[in-house]
Amino acid sequence: MKEKIDLIIFGGQSNMQGQSERLSNCNVVENAYEYRFLGDELIPLCNPVGENIKVDRTPGIAHQKGGDGQKWLREHVTGGSASGNTNMVPEFCKAYNGVTGTKVVAVHAAKGSTQIDYWLPGTFGYQFVVDKAKAAIEKATSVYEVGRIFFVWLQGESDALARVMKEEYMEKLVCLNQGLKESLGIETFGIIRVGRFTKDERDQEIIDAQDEICEKDGDFTMLTDMAAQMSEEAQYMNPYVPGHFSAEGLELLGKTAGEALGRKK
Image 1 (tube, one colour):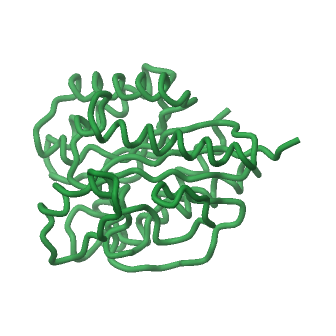
Image 2 (image 1 turned 30 degrees about the horizontal axis):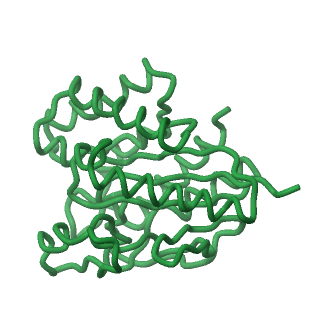
C-alpha cells in the first residue's frame, strides 16, 4: 500500500510569489516536496520556492530588484521568489505537516502584479495552474497515494488598485473555485486574507469580499486574517518594496495559515 500524501497549490500575486527582502532559513522541510514543472520532478522543499517560467513554458529568469519589471511580467506566466529570497510555502507546509502528520507536495504557481482576472478559467494563467497541478498529481501518484488537494490563495492587491468592488471580486472567486473543483478536484479554497496595500477604502472592498465568501460559501476557508494588521507593523514588511511582506512576515503568515489548513476537517 502506498503512503498517502496531500497536495497544496499556492496561487496569487507578489506576496504569494515571494517578494521578501532576504533569504532566511534554507533548511529542507521534512516530509515535504516541491513539484517543479520544468524538470517534472519532486524535490525536497526549501527556500527559495517557485519557478520562473515564460509564457511559452520555457525557463525564465528571476525577477530582480531594479530590473525591467514590466518586461519580466510580459514574458513570464509564473515566477519564483523574487531575487531568490524567502517565500511562505516552506513554513506553511512545515506547519501543515506538524498538525496532520501527512506528507505534502507543494505546487507553487503565482505571479506578481496580477489581478484575479489573470487566473480565471479560459486564461493562460489558469491553464498553466491546472497543467502544473495535473503534472504534479501524476508525478506524486507514481510514488504515493494522493489524498486531499487544496488551493491556497493570497491575492487582491492589484484588484484593490483597480477599484474592483466587493460583489465583482466575490463573483470571480466563485468562478475560479468552480473551475478548480472541476479541473483538479480541490477540496477547499483556502484564503490568506489580503493585507492593506492601498491604505484606503479600496483595500476594504477586497477584504470584505474575502470575509463574506468564507462566511457564506462552504467551499471557502479563511486561513488567517492577520495580514491587514501585519501591514501596519514595520518588522513584518519589506523595507525596500512597499506593501510587501518581509521574510519574517511571510514566514509568520505561512506558519499560521498552514496550521489552520491542517486543522481543516
